[in-house]
Image (cartoon, rainbow, N blue to C red; front, side, top):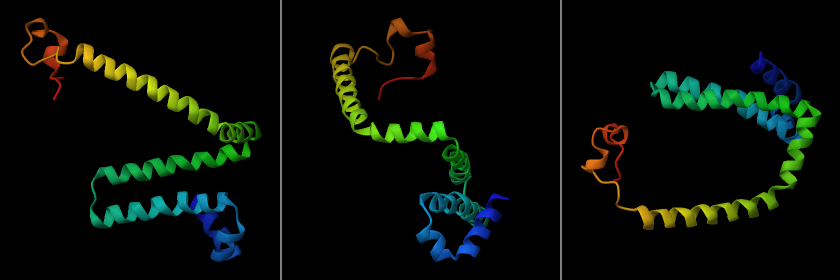
Length: 134
């Protein structure tokens, strides 16, 4: 039904008019509608493995994003988040620096303490799980 709606709109407005006159919503509709279909047909015809079909599932889940445009409070929240991106960028860089510092500190302080064959880990969950550093 969704593909039929998009197809009717493209035919009624002509492909060029639909793509140029329309907003980003029209372009998003085309990509979300036809891209999964093309990938699915290619996966069936060329016998791809299941990882390609995960792309189809993710793109189909993006159809729900269309609903967010029609809910005004959610749309306003999205506009607000886009306006706040520069501030989020600075806070994100600060968090990245803090995490990097703790990672380097932890590597220097605790690095090399977990080794294959450590007697303290023998028979415990960590020792039997096969999680060892490279």
